Image (cartoon, rainbow, N blue to C red; front, side):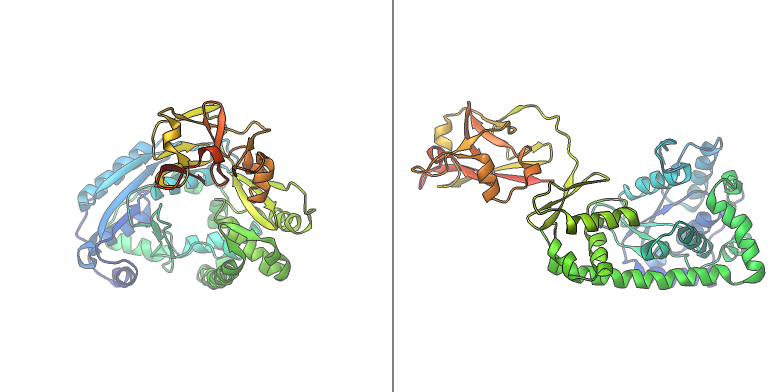
Length: 446
Protein backbone atom coordinates (compact mmCIF):
# COMPACT_ATOMS: atom_id res chain seq x y z
CA UNK A 1 0.00 0.00 0.00
CA UNK A 2 1.27 3.50 -0.84
CA UNK A 3 2.42 5.59 2.07
CA UNK A 4 0.00 8.11 3.54
CA UNK A 5 1.32 11.64 3.80
CA UNK A 6 0.10 14.23 6.25
CA UNK A 7 -3.02 15.88 4.78
CA UNK A 8 -2.39 19.30 3.27
CA UNK A 9 -4.88 22.13 3.10
CA UNK A 10 -6.36 23.27 -0.18
CA UNK A 11 -9.65 24.57 -1.51
CA UNK A 12 -11.48 21.30 -0.81
CA UNK A 13 -10.10 21.09 2.73
CA UNK A 14 -10.97 24.76 3.33
CA UNK A 15 -14.58 24.19 2.22
CA UNK A 16 -14.88 21.15 4.45
CA UNK A 17 -13.35 23.00 7.39
CA UNK A 18 -15.87 25.85 7.00
CA UNK A 19 -18.71 23.33 6.90
CA UNK A 20 -17.49 21.47 9.99
CA UNK A 21 -16.98 24.63 12.04
CA UNK A 22 -20.55 25.64 11.27
CA UNK A 23 -22.14 22.21 11.76
CA UNK A 24 -20.14 20.31 14.39
CA UNK A 25 -19.76 21.56 17.97
CA UNK A 26 -16.32 21.20 19.53
CA UNK A 27 -15.80 17.87 21.27
CA UNK A 28 -18.31 15.86 19.25
CA UNK A 29 -17.55 12.32 18.14
CA UNK A 30 -17.66 11.80 14.38
CA UNK A 31 -17.88 8.33 12.89
CA UNK A 32 -16.98 8.00 9.21
CA UNK A 33 -18.60 5.24 7.19
CA UNK A 34 -15.51 3.90 5.40
CA UNK A 35 -16.02 1.59 2.43
CA UNK A 36 -12.46 1.93 1.13
CA UNK A 37 -13.61 3.49 -2.15
CA UNK A 38 -12.42 6.79 -3.57
CA UNK A 39 -15.06 9.00 -1.93
CA UNK A 40 -14.76 7.74 1.65
CA UNK A 41 -10.95 7.57 1.46
CA UNK A 42 -10.74 11.22 0.40
CA UNK A 43 -13.11 12.20 3.20
CA UNK A 44 -11.12 10.15 5.72
CA UNK A 45 -7.90 11.88 4.64
CA UNK A 46 -9.52 15.34 4.91
CA UNK A 47 -11.17 14.70 8.28
CA UNK A 48 -7.97 13.29 9.75
CA UNK A 49 -6.21 16.52 8.86
CA UNK A 50 -8.93 18.74 10.35
CA UNK A 51 -9.79 16.95 13.60
CA UNK A 52 -7.25 18.79 15.76
CA UNK A 53 -7.96 22.32 14.59
CA UNK A 54 -11.75 21.80 14.42
CA UNK A 55 -11.82 20.06 17.81
CA UNK A 56 -13.75 16.87 17.03
CA UNK A 57 -12.97 13.22 17.69
CA UNK A 58 -12.78 10.95 14.65
CA UNK A 59 -13.25 7.21 14.20
CA UNK A 60 -14.09 5.07 11.19
CA UNK A 61 -16.32 2.03 10.76
CA UNK A 62 -16.17 -0.43 7.87
CA UNK A 63 -19.33 -2.46 7.31
CA UNK A 64 -18.42 -5.86 5.89
CA UNK A 65 -21.42 -7.12 3.93
CA UNK A 66 -19.74 -10.39 3.01
CA UNK A 67 -21.14 -10.17 -0.53
CA UNK A 68 -17.95 -9.73 -2.58
CA UNK A 69 -15.26 -12.44 -2.55
CA UNK A 70 -12.85 -9.56 -1.81
CA UNK A 71 -14.80 -8.34 1.24
CA UNK A 72 -12.09 -9.34 3.73
CA UNK A 73 -9.39 -7.70 1.57
CA UNK A 74 -11.36 -4.43 1.65
CA UNK A 75 -11.69 -4.68 5.41
CA UNK A 76 -7.94 -5.16 5.81
CA UNK A 77 -7.24 -2.25 3.45
CA UNK A 78 -9.46 0.07 5.52
CA UNK A 79 -7.75 -1.03 8.73
CA UNK A 80 -4.31 -0.22 7.24
CA UNK A 81 -5.34 3.22 5.97
CA UNK A 82 -6.80 4.15 9.36
CA UNK A 83 -3.70 2.88 11.16
CA UNK A 84 -1.51 5.05 8.92
CA UNK A 85 -3.62 8.11 9.77
CA UNK A 86 -3.97 7.13 13.45
CA UNK A 87 -7.76 7.02 13.21
CA UNK A 88 -9.55 4.53 15.50
CA UNK A 89 -11.08 1.82 13.34
CA UNK A 90 -13.88 -0.68 13.80
CA UNK A 91 -15.59 -3.35 11.74
CA UNK A 92 -19.21 -4.46 11.73
CA UNK A 93 -20.06 -7.64 9.86
CA UNK A 94 -23.66 -7.84 8.68
CA UNK A 95 -25.81 -10.49 7.07
CA UNK A 96 -27.64 -9.15 4.03
CA UNK A 97 -30.92 -10.97 3.33
CA UNK A 98 -31.20 -11.95 -0.33
CA UNK A 99 -34.88 -12.84 -0.21
CA UNK A 100 -36.35 -10.03 1.87
CA UNK A 101 -38.13 -8.33 -1.02
CA UNK A 102 -35.89 -5.24 -1.11
CA UNK A 103 -33.33 -6.43 -3.64
CA UNK A 104 -29.68 -6.99 -2.81
CA UNK A 105 -28.56 -3.36 -3.23
CA UNK A 106 -31.32 -1.91 -1.03
CA UNK A 107 -30.95 -4.67 1.56
CA UNK A 108 -27.20 -4.02 1.81
CA UNK A 109 -27.82 -0.30 2.19
CA UNK A 110 -30.39 -0.89 4.94
CA UNK A 111 -27.99 -3.21 6.81
CA UNK A 112 -25.16 -0.69 6.43
CA UNK A 113 -27.19 2.22 7.79
CA UNK A 114 -28.48 0.11 10.68
CA UNK A 115 -24.91 -0.82 11.63
CA UNK A 116 -23.62 2.77 11.42
CA UNK A 117 -26.53 4.30 13.32
CA UNK A 118 -26.18 1.76 16.14
CA UNK A 119 -22.69 3.05 17.02
CA UNK A 120 -21.86 5.37 19.96
CA UNK A 121 -21.23 8.60 18.04
CA UNK A 122 -22.70 12.08 17.86
CA UNK A 123 -22.69 12.16 14.07
CA UNK A 124 -22.20 9.62 11.32
CA UNK A 125 -20.35 11.15 8.36
CA UNK A 126 -20.96 9.79 4.86
CA UNK A 127 -19.07 10.57 1.65
CA UNK A 128 -21.97 11.01 -0.77
CA UNK A 129 -21.15 13.66 -3.38
CA UNK A 130 -22.88 15.69 -6.11
CA UNK A 131 -22.92 12.84 -8.62
CA UNK A 132 -24.57 10.55 -6.07
CA UNK A 133 -27.19 13.21 -5.42
CA UNK A 134 -28.00 13.62 -9.11
CA UNK A 135 -28.28 9.85 -9.55
CA UNK A 136 -30.55 9.57 -6.52
CA UNK A 137 -32.88 12.29 -7.82
CA UNK A 138 -33.18 10.64 -11.23
CA UNK A 139 -33.80 7.22 -9.66
CA UNK A 140 -36.50 8.70 -7.43
CA UNK A 141 -38.16 10.40 -10.42
CA UNK A 142 -38.25 7.08 -12.26
CA UNK A 143 -39.83 5.45 -9.18
CA UNK A 144 -42.55 8.12 -8.97
CA UNK A 145 -41.41 9.47 -5.62
CA UNK A 146 -43.04 12.46 -3.94
CA UNK A 147 -41.37 15.66 -2.85
CA UNK A 148 -39.60 14.09 0.12
CA UNK A 149 -38.17 11.35 -2.05
CA UNK A 150 -37.14 13.83 -4.74
CA UNK A 151 -35.33 15.89 -2.13
CA UNK A 152 -32.89 12.96 -2.27
CA UNK A 153 -30.21 12.96 0.45
CA UNK A 154 -30.06 15.78 3.00
CA UNK A 155 -26.77 17.42 3.90
CA UNK A 156 -27.70 16.96 7.55
CA UNK A 157 -30.34 14.89 9.29
CA UNK A 158 -30.89 15.26 13.00
CA UNK A 159 -30.49 12.44 15.48
CA UNK A 160 -33.49 11.21 17.45
CA UNK A 161 -31.92 10.51 20.83
CA UNK A 162 -31.49 6.83 19.99
CA UNK A 163 -29.34 7.20 16.88
CA UNK A 164 -26.70 9.76 15.84
CA UNK A 165 -27.26 12.51 13.30
CA UNK A 166 -26.00 12.07 9.73
CA UNK A 167 -23.67 14.49 7.90
CA UNK A 168 -22.96 14.48 4.17
CA UNK A 169 -20.43 17.30 3.77
CA UNK A 170 -19.50 16.52 0.14
CA UNK A 171 -22.93 16.79 -1.48
CA UNK A 172 -21.96 19.93 -3.39
CA UNK A 173 -18.65 18.44 -4.59
CA UNK A 174 -18.47 16.57 -7.94
CA UNK A 175 -16.76 13.21 -8.02
CA UNK A 176 -14.23 14.58 -10.51
CA UNK A 177 -13.00 17.02 -7.86
CA UNK A 178 -12.53 14.19 -5.37
CA UNK A 179 -10.68 12.13 -7.97
CA UNK A 180 -8.35 15.03 -8.80
CA UNK A 181 -7.69 15.61 -5.09
CA UNK A 182 -6.91 11.93 -4.53
CA UNK A 183 -4.47 11.85 -7.45
CA UNK A 184 -2.79 15.09 -6.36
CA UNK A 185 -2.25 13.70 -2.85
CA UNK A 186 -1.22 10.21 -4.00
CA UNK A 187 -4.08 8.53 -2.18
CA UNK A 188 -4.95 4.89 -2.69
CA UNK A 189 -8.38 3.30 -2.68
CA UNK A 190 -10.17 0.14 -3.73
CA UNK A 191 -12.51 -0.40 -6.66
CA UNK A 192 -15.69 -2.36 -6.01
CA UNK A 193 -16.27 -4.58 -9.01
CA UNK A 194 -20.04 -4.41 -8.42
CA UNK A 195 -19.94 -0.74 -9.45
CA UNK A 196 -19.61 -1.97 -13.05
CA UNK A 197 -22.57 -4.35 -12.84
CA UNK A 198 -25.31 -2.85 -15.03
CA UNK A 199 -27.93 -5.06 -13.37
CA UNK A 200 -28.03 -2.37 -10.67
CA UNK A 201 -30.16 0.63 -11.64
CA UNK A 202 -27.72 3.18 -10.27
CA UNK A 203 -24.85 1.72 -12.28
CA UNK A 204 -26.97 1.73 -15.44
CA UNK A 205 -27.68 5.45 -14.95
CA UNK A 206 -24.05 6.19 -14.09
CA UNK A 207 -22.46 4.40 -17.03
CA UNK A 208 -25.11 4.73 -19.76
CA UNK A 209 -27.64 7.49 -19.10
CA UNK A 210 -25.53 10.26 -17.58
CA UNK A 211 -22.78 10.13 -20.24
CA UNK A 212 -25.50 10.62 -22.88
CA UNK A 213 -27.12 13.42 -20.90
CA UNK A 214 -23.82 15.21 -20.48
CA UNK A 215 -23.24 15.20 -24.24
CA UNK A 216 -26.29 17.45 -24.59
CA UNK A 217 -26.47 18.98 -21.11
CA UNK A 218 -22.89 19.24 -19.74
CA UNK A 219 -24.03 20.58 -16.38
CA UNK A 220 -26.75 17.95 -15.88
CA UNK A 221 -25.31 16.52 -12.67
CA UNK A 222 -24.98 19.90 -10.96
CA UNK A 223 -28.40 21.11 -12.14
CA UNK A 224 -30.08 17.91 -10.96
CA UNK A 225 -28.34 18.22 -7.59
CA UNK A 226 -29.48 21.84 -7.43
CA UNK A 227 -33.06 20.73 -8.14
CA UNK A 228 -32.77 18.24 -5.28
CA UNK A 229 -31.78 21.13 -3.00
CA UNK A 230 -34.85 23.14 -4.13
CA UNK A 231 -37.05 20.12 -3.46
CA UNK A 232 -35.45 19.71 -0.04
CA UNK A 233 -36.55 23.26 0.79
CA UNK A 234 -40.08 22.44 -0.38
CA UNK A 235 -40.05 19.28 1.76
CA UNK A 236 -38.90 21.32 4.76
CA UNK A 237 -41.80 23.72 4.20
CA UNK A 238 -44.26 20.81 4.09
CA UNK A 239 -42.76 19.52 7.35
CA UNK A 240 -43.24 22.93 8.93
CA UNK A 241 -46.88 23.04 7.85
CA UNK A 242 -47.36 19.49 9.17
CA UNK A 243 -45.90 20.42 12.56
CA UNK A 244 -48.27 23.37 12.81
CA UNK A 245 -51.25 21.18 11.93
CA UNK A 246 -50.05 18.45 14.30
CA UNK A 247 -50.04 20.92 17.21
CA UNK A 248 -53.79 21.26 16.71
CA UNK A 249 -54.86 17.83 15.52
CA UNK A 250 -52.48 15.31 17.14
CA UNK A 251 -52.41 14.57 20.86
CA UNK A 252 -51.06 11.63 22.83
CA UNK A 253 -49.96 10.08 19.55
CA UNK A 254 -53.52 10.06 18.15
CA UNK A 255 -54.70 11.90 15.08
CA UNK A 256 -58.06 13.66 15.23
CA UNK A 257 -59.96 12.58 12.11
CA UNK A 258 -61.90 15.86 12.24
CA UNK A 259 -58.69 17.59 11.18
CA UNK A 260 -58.52 15.43 8.06
CA UNK A 261 -62.06 16.50 7.20
CA UNK A 262 -61.43 20.22 7.72
CA UNK A 263 -58.11 20.50 5.91
CA UNK A 264 -57.78 20.39 2.14
CA UNK A 265 -56.98 16.89 0.88
CA UNK A 266 -53.30 17.63 0.03
CA UNK A 267 -52.77 19.27 3.42
CA UNK A 268 -54.65 16.50 5.22
CA UNK A 269 -52.51 13.81 3.57
CA UNK A 270 -49.41 15.81 4.47
CA UNK A 271 -50.56 15.69 8.11
CA UNK A 272 -51.31 11.97 7.79
CA UNK A 273 -47.78 11.34 6.48
CA UNK A 274 -46.35 13.32 9.38
CA UNK A 275 -48.33 11.25 11.89
CA UNK A 276 -47.38 7.95 10.25
CA UNK A 277 -43.69 8.93 10.14
CA UNK A 278 -43.57 8.53 13.92
CA UNK A 279 -45.17 5.08 13.68
CA UNK A 280 -43.47 3.25 10.80
CA UNK A 281 -39.97 3.10 9.33
CA UNK A 282 -41.04 2.96 5.69
CA UNK A 283 -43.81 5.28 4.53
CA UNK A 284 -46.67 3.50 2.72
CA UNK A 285 -47.02 3.99 -1.02
CA UNK A 286 -49.10 6.81 -2.50
CA UNK A 287 -51.95 4.43 -3.22
CA UNK A 288 -51.83 2.93 0.26
CA UNK A 289 -51.79 6.37 1.87
CA UNK A 290 -54.83 7.38 -0.18
CA UNK A 291 -56.60 4.21 0.99
CA UNK A 292 -55.83 4.98 4.65
CA UNK A 293 -57.04 8.55 4.20
CA UNK A 294 -60.35 7.47 2.61
CA UNK A 295 -61.02 4.69 5.13
CA UNK A 296 -60.44 7.00 8.10
CA UNK A 297 -62.93 9.47 6.64
CA UNK A 298 -65.53 7.15 5.13
CA UNK A 299 -65.78 4.05 7.31
CA UNK A 300 -68.94 3.73 9.41
CA UNK A 301 -68.65 5.22 12.91
CA UNK A 302 -69.00 1.77 14.48
CA UNK A 303 -66.64 0.02 12.04
CA UNK A 304 -63.75 -1.95 13.59
CA UNK A 305 -61.19 -0.35 11.30
CA UNK A 306 -57.83 -2.12 11.08
CA UNK A 307 -55.46 -1.18 8.24
CA UNK A 308 -52.33 -3.33 8.29
CA UNK A 309 -48.98 -1.58 7.90
CA UNK A 310 -45.38 -2.39 8.72
CA UNK A 311 -45.20 -3.20 12.42
CA UNK A 312 -48.85 -2.69 13.27
CA UNK A 313 -52.25 -1.36 12.26
CA UNK A 314 -54.00 1.97 11.83
CA UNK A 315 -57.17 1.95 13.92
CA UNK A 316 -59.98 4.43 14.46
CA UNK A 317 -61.85 4.89 17.74
CA UNK A 318 -64.14 7.71 18.83
CA UNK A 319 -63.01 10.01 16.06
CA UNK A 320 -59.28 9.44 16.56
CA UNK A 321 -56.79 7.52 14.45
CA UNK A 322 -54.54 5.25 16.50
CA UNK A 323 -51.49 3.25 15.50
CA UNK A 324 -51.53 -0.09 17.26
CA UNK A 325 -48.13 -1.73 17.31
CA UNK A 326 -47.95 -5.41 16.52
CA UNK A 327 -47.10 -7.17 19.77
CA UNK A 328 -46.25 -10.67 20.80
CA UNK A 329 -48.96 -12.43 22.79
CA UNK A 330 -46.75 -15.24 24.01
CA UNK A 331 -46.46 -14.16 27.64
CA UNK A 332 -47.54 -16.74 30.23
CA UNK A 333 -51.23 -16.81 31.08
CA UNK A 334 -50.44 -15.87 34.70
CA UNK A 335 -47.50 -13.98 36.19
CA UNK A 336 -46.76 -13.23 39.84
CA UNK A 337 -45.68 -9.89 41.25
CA UNK A 338 -43.14 -10.06 44.07
CA UNK A 339 -42.52 -6.40 44.81
CA UNK A 340 -40.86 -5.26 41.54
CA UNK A 341 -41.28 -1.61 40.61
CA UNK A 342 -42.04 -2.63 37.05
CA UNK A 343 -42.81 -5.70 35.00
CA UNK A 344 -42.18 -5.91 31.26
CA UNK A 345 -45.17 -7.49 29.54
CA UNK A 346 -46.20 -7.97 25.94
CA UNK A 347 -47.17 -4.56 24.65
CA UNK A 348 -46.00 -2.41 27.55
CA UNK A 349 -44.81 -1.98 31.12
CA UNK A 350 -46.76 -2.51 34.30
CA UNK A 351 -45.50 -0.05 36.93
CA UNK A 352 -46.03 -0.17 40.71
CA UNK A 353 -45.48 2.41 43.42
CA UNK A 354 -46.52 2.77 47.04
CA UNK A 355 -48.73 5.61 48.31
CA UNK A 356 -50.66 6.40 51.48
CA UNK A 357 -54.43 6.15 51.33
CA UNK A 358 -54.64 5.18 47.66
CA UNK A 359 -54.54 2.03 45.54
CA UNK A 360 -54.67 -1.56 46.76
CA UNK A 361 -54.52 -2.14 50.51
CA UNK A 362 -51.10 -3.66 51.19
CA UNK A 363 -52.31 -5.03 54.54
CA UNK A 364 -55.07 -7.03 52.85
CA UNK A 365 -52.57 -8.76 50.59
CA UNK A 366 -51.21 -10.46 53.70
CA UNK A 367 -47.89 -11.15 52.01
CA UNK A 368 -49.41 -13.16 49.20
CA UNK A 369 -48.16 -12.29 45.68
CA UNK A 370 -50.39 -10.48 43.22
CA UNK A 371 -51.20 -12.38 40.06
CA UNK A 372 -51.23 -10.68 36.67
CA UNK A 373 -53.54 -12.25 34.11
CA UNK A 374 -54.92 -11.48 30.71
CA UNK A 375 -58.60 -10.92 30.16
CA UNK A 376 -60.64 -14.00 29.28
CA UNK A 377 -64.07 -12.36 29.14
CA UNK A 378 -66.97 -11.94 31.57
CA UNK A 379 -64.94 -10.29 34.37
CA UNK A 380 -66.73 -7.91 36.75
CA UNK A 381 -65.45 -5.32 39.23
CA UNK A 382 -67.22 -3.47 42.06
CA UNK A 383 -65.60 -0.04 42.33
CA UNK A 384 -68.01 1.46 44.90
CA UNK A 385 -69.06 -0.19 48.16
CA UNK A 386 -72.79 0.29 47.63
CA UNK A 387 -72.75 0.00 43.87
CA UNK A 388 -73.18 -3.04 41.67
CA UNK A 389 -70.37 -5.13 40.27
CA UNK A 390 -70.00 -3.97 36.67
CA UNK A 391 -68.66 -5.75 33.64
CA UNK A 392 -65.21 -4.78 32.47
CA UNK A 393 -66.70 -4.21 29.02
CA UNK A 394 -68.83 -1.36 30.35
CA UNK A 395 -65.99 0.05 32.44
CA UNK A 396 -63.68 -0.03 29.43
CA UNK A 397 -66.26 1.78 27.32
CA UNK A 398 -66.64 4.51 29.94
CA UNK A 399 -62.85 4.89 30.15
CA UNK A 400 -62.59 5.08 26.33
CA UNK A 401 -60.31 2.05 26.13
CA UNK A 402 -60.41 0.86 22.50
CA UNK A 403 -61.73 -2.65 21.97
CA UNK A 404 -58.46 -3.97 20.48
CA UNK A 405 -56.51 -2.93 23.61
CA UNK A 406 -58.79 -4.58 26.13
CA UNK A 407 -57.55 -8.15 25.73
CA UNK A 408 -53.92 -7.17 26.40
CA UNK A 409 -54.55 -4.89 29.38
CA UNK A 410 -53.24 -6.68 32.51
CA UNK A 411 -55.67 -7.58 35.30
CA UNK A 412 -54.54 -7.85 38.96
CA UNK A 413 -55.76 -10.80 41.00
CA UNK A 414 -55.35 -11.92 44.60
CA UNK A 415 -55.69 -15.66 44.50
CA UNK A 416 -58.73 -16.00 42.20
CA UNK A 417 -60.33 -12.65 42.96
CA UNK A 418 -60.06 -9.71 40.53
CA UNK A 419 -59.05 -6.76 42.71
CA UNK A 420 -57.77 -4.07 40.32
CA UNK A 421 -57.44 -3.05 36.69
CA UNK A 422 -54.81 -0.39 35.86
CA UNK A 423 -56.45 2.75 34.53
CA UNK A 424 -59.90 1.59 35.66
CA UNK A 425 -59.77 1.27 39.43
CA UNK A 426 -59.52 -0.93 42.55
CA UNK A 427 -62.31 -3.13 43.89
CA UNK A 428 -64.03 -1.33 46.77
CA UNK A 429 -63.19 -4.07 49.28
CA UNK A 430 -59.52 -3.74 48.45
CA UNK A 431 -59.10 0.03 48.45
CA UNK A 432 -56.55 1.41 50.93
CA UNK A 433 -58.14 3.53 53.66
CA UNK A 434 -57.03 6.95 54.83
CA UNK A 435 -53.57 6.73 56.37
CA UNK A 436 -53.14 3.16 55.15
CA UNK A 437 -50.33 2.03 52.86
CA UNK A 438 -51.54 1.39 49.34
CA UNK A 439 -50.16 0.05 46.08
CA UNK A 440 -50.79 1.95 42.84
CA UNK A 441 -50.47 0.32 39.42
CA UNK A 442 -50.05 1.94 36.02
CA UNK A 443 -50.07 0.38 32.55
CA UNK A 444 -47.85 2.08 29.98
CA UNK A 445 -48.35 0.80 26.49
CA UNK A 446 -45.44 0.72 24.04
